[in-house]
Image 1 (cartoon, rainbow, N blue to C red):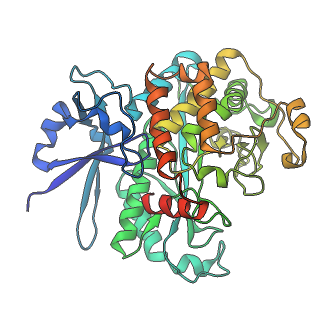
Image 2 (cartoon, rainbow, N blue to C red; image 1 turned 60 degrees about the horizontal axis):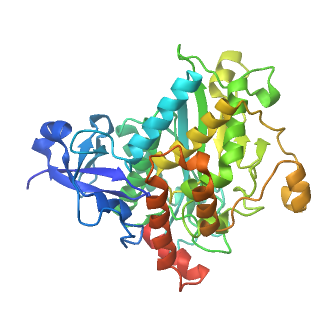
Image 3 (cartoon, rainbow, N blue to C red; image 1 turned 180 degrees about the vertical axis):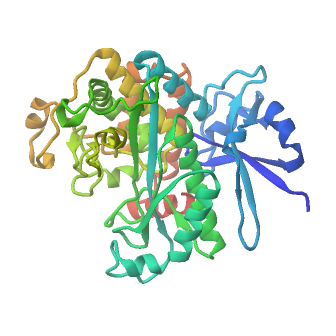
Length: 433
């Protein structure tokens, strides 16, 4: 047989799509790429093509990035894939290439603040089927029932060049959480895509099926993606922590956090982009319902995380903030780009982060929330899209046609679900993610 390698892009639907070609062509393809079609950007997560400005016209190139190559060895068959960038035939970044959009956001952070981003994505997923794990929230037996899957996944992540951190049986039915160490720049979003693909691959290899759907059951827990962020200065030293700053945040971190909080309701359509994401983003689900900053508070949308060392140098390196209003229906590159742009906007505007909350915001009236500077985050994808499209600052972070195309993409997803109730919607997303 002819060995093949698959080159893919994480698209607007958070799906990894691409083409395969003979492995012996890889060196050539690293330079010349492989053909791609503009209207592919409008394939939603249910394989429906949304209204497209491109129609049948146009050609693009998908250029593999050698740094993202993954070779996963399984007993029955190997898997070989690589991520890439979408460019025009002239070699310029395409307006809807999510990796390029993240690179642009990271360049803006560097230009404005002189720092690079160190980040990590923390994922929750569930195994399909009835695995009879009653009473095993965080349990050893629940872990042991899937030890083979957990060890295989951690092995494959390490073989792919990442630093496995931890894996555990989570609270929800058949639910697990997997964490890898932080990476610099675009590589952390690449790691998130690769982690999702390898999780599915490992489950398949063992005769199981994993889903990263935002929520399987409206009455149960959801699957979140928590994005941890810190900053490194030009010398590679940590720039996130200040022992004298509120909750330990440096001035840079406070301004960045304030920007994320200010624009959170308008970027939610990019970080929690499914119609069922909003079943999860409700009070008392340990997710995110308000644009609040919390100090070690898992109900907060943005959290100052705990640190496990007393050594000052190590403390500064561990210190990070965590964005919690995201899930795996989002493309990691696009979600991180939106968060970074919001944070940089806060730096440019000279914003100051509020005091971390220490109360149950769901008990406050709308007036009390407003008086304290908080808003209830959008409670539907439609509302989130309206806020995104109406915010001239936010849509200005992206190429001119992006907001229109993205909104059309998501509206086609909403239309596909229009005759379904929430249980049916959850089943549809469980199948595709």
